[in-house]
Amino acid sequence: MAHAELTRPLADRMRPRSLEEVVGQSHLLGVGKPLRSAVESGNPHSFILWGPPGTGKTTLARLVAQRSGAEFIALSAVMAGVKDVRAAVERAQSARAAGRGTVLFLDEVHRFSKSQQDTFLPYLEDGTLTFIGATTENPSFEVVGALLSRARVYVLKSLGTTEIEQLLQRALVDRERGLGARELRCAAGVLSLLAAAADGDGRRALGMLEIAADLCETVDGCATITEVVAREVAGGSRRRFDKGGEAFYDQISALHKCVRGTDPDAALYWLARMLDGGCDPAYLARRITRMAIEDIGLADPRALQLAVDAWQAYERMGSPEGDLALANVVVYLACAPKSNAAYKAFGEARADVETFGSLEVPLRLRNAPTRLMKEIDYGKGYRYAHDEPDAYARGERYLPDDMPDRHYYRPVARGLEIRIAEALQRLRAQEPKS
Image (tube, rainbow, N blue to C red; front, side):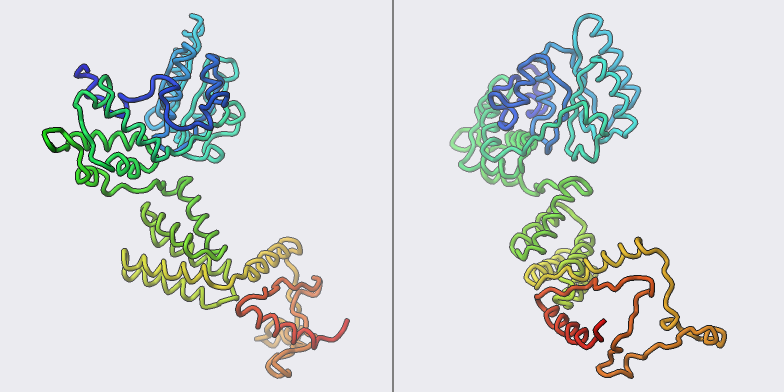
């Protein structure tokens, strides 16, 4: 292999040259599947590849251009701007005049602003270029609707450990592009260890293998990647987590739903995943407190206090000690009786505020701190509940006079709300019949 080739990263050298070399994505690249058909047709349509890092998005874009014989222009939204897009369009127009098509590949398309994305639209419409975008973020939120309507979205999946081991084994034996010329051996379990640490990212896996190869040791006269070396290279790897991105919101959603669904084990798993990914524990504390309010509510009023206590404990101790306080309250909330009765009641009350507008407070419910206010009947007829039997003013009405009766709060038959429901029912049974 030439010196120039050796300076390229192993992951780039091992980039698949044909569909047959692509590992994974069988749901898109199997025989008769949509993306394979698009590549093999030689006349591809515009599309967006959405998936985690290291799953082959750039490779697939290159294969499309290669198979179609089109001009391939690659841009990265991190560095490119409208000027670069215009230059690419000029190249595409020249290629079109010469009878060739153009595939424009935009990596990390989600980093382009809405107006920047709009610059592609006329050239997709008139066939000047075929657009292929790649993104790790949900296109529903990050790509303009006009572009989405002109480009099909294909969802790529993380590579499985078996698939990544296949990539690593191929790189070890490939003498032309890989590490085969070095005749390396791997101790038992090394490839599995590296594959697991890659967390579904083929590029990361090949990068770790390349580093491990440079640190290999001589065992029985042979260059060997030992388990010790592999663990050193793989150490400190974090699971996939993008603060503020799709994975972030998916995982906090999963945590909330586990608590609501009374599954403490799954709740602990997702809490651990988010902490492992670098999520701010203060953010988690705030969301956990929200869970106590929204999903446990008055079925167990202690839940809110425990959530606030855990939040304060984290603020005082920090990580890792404070993380355990969050874990404790997550388990408690997951096991606690559930009620969203107060949450729903508040939502219904707010809806009525919107519906009925600024209704007047009945005079009897108004304070009268001045003589004038008393003279115009502020507070007149008010019944002080503590002077009534059971501290309950039977027949009194507290809603605006022009508003119909409402019972927003409907306690559930769980936890403390069982007792609350009984108390409300007992008092309401004393109301005069209308």
